[in-house]
Length: 77
Image 1 (cartoon, rainbow, N blue to C red):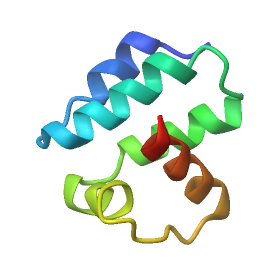
Image 2: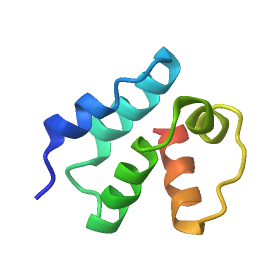
Image 3: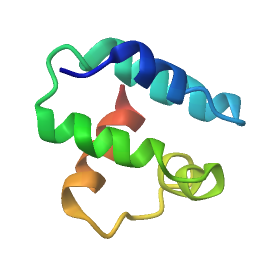
Image 4: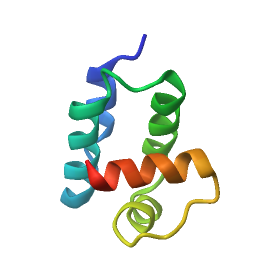
């Protein structure tokens, strides 16, 4: 079982823009997300802010297709 409180805390980043995107996706989709998608989200939270910003804010492509799909869902959330 995923600890949403822990994930919510990990969504707090050094950039407000990242906070908003990550927290919004978590609130809207975590309850219905597949376990693989949650694992992918957790992996994204492990990235440093500059790298995460390149994927989420600048639109740089992620090399993993499943992660790329999740990134696009986060950007649209």
